[in-house]
Length: 481
Image (cartoon, rainbow, N blue to C red; front, top):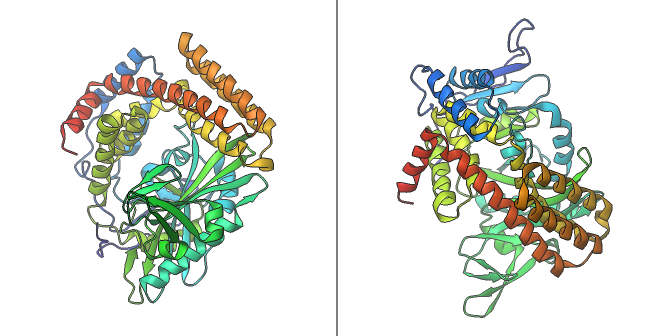
């Protein structure tokens, strides 16, 4: 998708009057942003659709408050969802209207504290950034059991050439990686930077042409990685090699989340742009991301956010929905994972006007069984922490496994409960041993497999229980990939 040039930047609105119903939130249009695909016409009466999904929820045993659902649908449907920027004048956070509806500020201090580790500093005037939380982290009102702490950061680099911008980005990522390699309560475990020029394997895992290069901290320190090519020869790629085509960039840490008394995986996905001397904005990975799933943490970053938003194409909403629908197809047909299907359908339905169906899916994320999503993700985090030495004490990790055991007991019944608890107890024992990586590998696979099967079965059953969603999935499946 080529960046568009017709849109005007968003501007922060003045605080609402104290008597206004929206006194805590100021609204600013992201001027010229793409028009809503399916809701440009007048809002329809969603009453019958809501009644149908409420009936489906009752049959499934999901508690769906009809009054609350109607209020949420009304809030979604009353305005076009294509380009409204909401700024919370009390907290200084901002984001797209549909994202802000799902965000609650209770965890804001926690995310801002993590942001000190994962976020990049401005280098004014040539490098400006805008850090946000994204995904389930941003949807804190509906995701009671978020597995990870996902961040997303826009980085705009003014430079004479693209090569210079890539070099600045490479320096920033390396500097951040080295500065946050380890410390009180955190450890860096992977950086994605650069693209593989040929097929091969690295660490026993296959890599394809243009797939992201994954760097360990030791490889970053050494400035190079080794890959075995398909012909059996060895290739050595340097950090400078990766700098030429940064591609999709992401950093991952294990962080001790003191406010919740547990370990968490914290990631930061970078959307980096080069601003040429003539003012042209060029995404370094070839794609300027939309902003429909992010909540930005500092209103002072609105100017750079606005500059980038105006570059979005008029087809951004359509492109966004199309991309998500392809992922729905992938996780329905190619790599079945109905939890991922549900998350993507929720975002599709929020954007294309299927608000009643979105309200139903919204409730699914709050059910106890979705805690198993957290189980599947956190066992990997615990394993990585167990291998890190003194950075994380075994008592903290053992307590976290105990919490996962309680989540499994609450979510499951009968043989499934007994099997999951048994796997978690074995994992608990292997973590306490420290360094027993081989023993843990099988335990981790058992836990993750059992957890994801339960989650997958639950979400497939739930999604298929609503005729409209079931029909939509069948339509997606019938499409060519």
